[in-house]
Length: 182
Image (cartoon, rainbow, N blue to C red; front, side, top):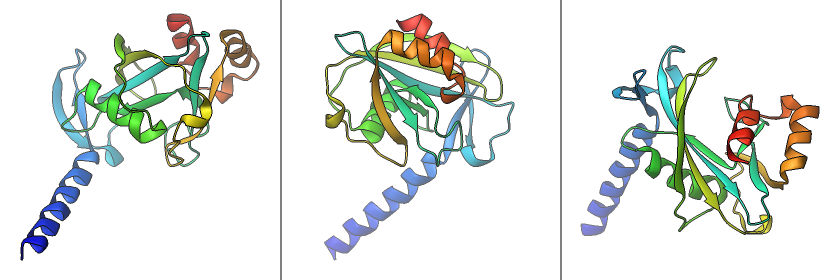
């Protein structure tokens, strides 16, 4: 009887967690929580939260991730190594640590908090940046291909050249982040 109850409890917990992941935190113009809404039916005017991780190594290279082609927002575009929408029940820090593990297999890290900015346009959100320096070869990242197509270390010069020559390969905000963090 006990194993059946444990299995039922785990099943209920999974259903609750999956339902929470469908809802994201909605905020006002000052980043105060005002609601949670289903991410699939989110009205364009809603402002939500995103956490992002800017990773560099001791050579000054920047780790970028190419978004999976199955992503609804900016598929196949290069962007920060890790980023995610803050789900109901999370804060920015909890989210970035979860996303780091989920997207590229990065665990047991302590990124420092960076700037928070408001992004407006087709998508409206606050992004809380976290910064991390880590020396790790690409082969040691565990890529979740549902989230990320590939990761690559870019030198600053290589990245600036790629942004100039092929801007459509990158998230529209990438040039801003390079200026801010490099």
